[in-house]
Length: 441
Image 1 (cartoon, one colour):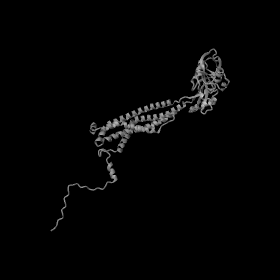
Image 2 (cartoon, one colour):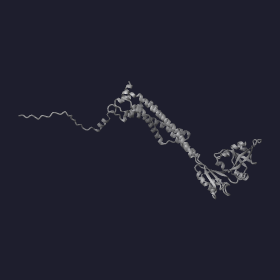
Image 3 (cartoon, helix red, strand yellow):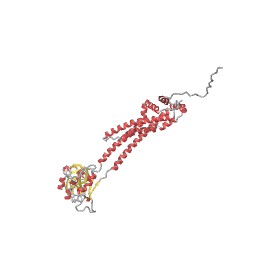
Image 4 (cartoon, helix red, strand yellow):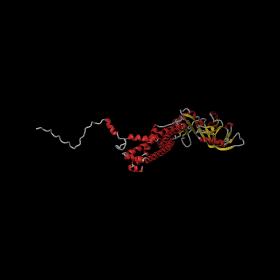
């Protein structure tokens, strides 16, 4: 009897899984990136978004430039403002350095209300000692003679006229004219006139007008308390001690001999820039080594508060203008981006219909506005730097532009573009596909 082979069991209905070899690295990479358009896996990569934004911007270069124009101007004003403010601040500092105190005033520090004790006070010809101090440019005594003297003018060129005025009278040493920066006509009394007690005088510009003295070279004579004095010069301007412009100025030697001067009241010392404080500490000892405590040296306060206030006000005004320009630029970007959203509503709806997510639409328009702002900011930074150099050269200022300003310009433009694109981007992301496609019919 023949034996039949065993019957194989019928196959079950369970699915069978075929074995596949592991995918290579390249195949896995292709699977991850094979779908880059919305609708296949609903994902748009950042690189594709950036590429599409750049394509749109370069396809309409004039429109992109006009959109970025507001930011360009704003950043140019910002960079130019900061650069010019820094350059102007250097110029202001230089000007204030020129105005820094260079004057030292030396007076007698009286022991009581009656004045200095005998043997104390300022010595005669003390300027010779003071000029030996390092940093001293000029020095001279000045004493106002009280009360005001009766001065009668008798001009040579108009002998029929005369004028009598109560004029303030000062007795000065020869070095005072340089110490106060006096400029004028004729000559000023020298040590020759002072040592000999010559009866000569110099009139301030206003006093000369009152006494009808116009030409000191013709030897006009004025009478001080009846004493004839020859006018040899007229002071037209001074840098300090403006009271001299309305006064009669006579040599110290003449005042000692004829007008009763007993001791100088004050000495003015002109120093080099920055040397006033050092000179003020040495001048009392140089003048009176036996009694330096009898003298008091004072320096005019430096205008540091004024310098800081002027610099702060200037920078504040310019930065306010730059801020307004940036706001205007941001509004311009927001407006153009919003118009683009409205014009592309149908396209946005189509993208949403084939699978683009809200975040993809949001990222597209945010990146668009940010790149527009950044593009305008880069051009604006270059324009602002050029503006700073040109204006500084024209004004003769040292052009100053900090490195952080060059980085702040593009950063500010990108930030303005990002902020300006938030509302239009959110509005675009909220568009529903059905409504968008229906509106495009």
